[in-house]
Length: 227
Image 1 (cartoon, one colour):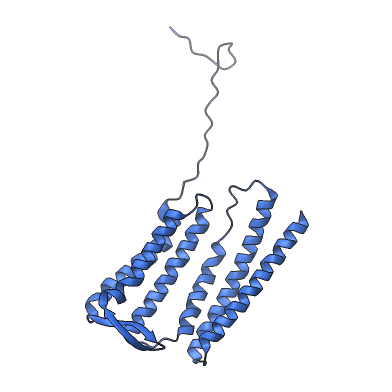
Image 2 (cartoon, helix red, strand yellow; image 1 turned 30 degrees about the vertical axis):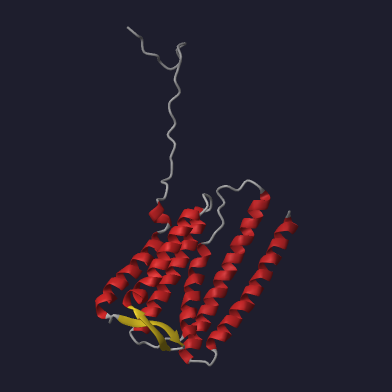
């Protein structure tokens, strides 16, 4: 009969197995839940509007006036199919690192498609919506989602990489504030019906982009000076 081995005996002792906590790994749905939600919302809206629209619908506008008509499936399915194809392409070609960052980029793209799709449906049924207001809403939503574009620090080992990550996060926060501000301006221009409102908004966006580039460059120089 084999004798039991007690602690402190001369026989071989087996160390107790340590309990190691492994955090749950997020699923693909957790990473892209906003993208899936936007895509499903577009398909649901298309299914809802399908029996309520005629066979021919506006598919192109000259300002606020439709100047080209096409089959109903083009007006209702072109944007959802394009958004789904672009999402799948980004999903298949995305990197293995910084997964959360690129998932947020996919979400922003899909949500922008959803906003444009809602705008196109409203114009198809006869609502006159100023383009500057639509662009303003798009910029506002992107600005609200942009702060989550944080650099992936899980694989950082070098100080240079960490410095680049800090610059990225500072620039993304500044870009978020810029886009939200321009979004509010765009909505206001559209509501007031300012002449050349789209040109004004695009000029402000261009100037803001240049300013953001200068800000990011200066932030990078500051990080390099600290090393």
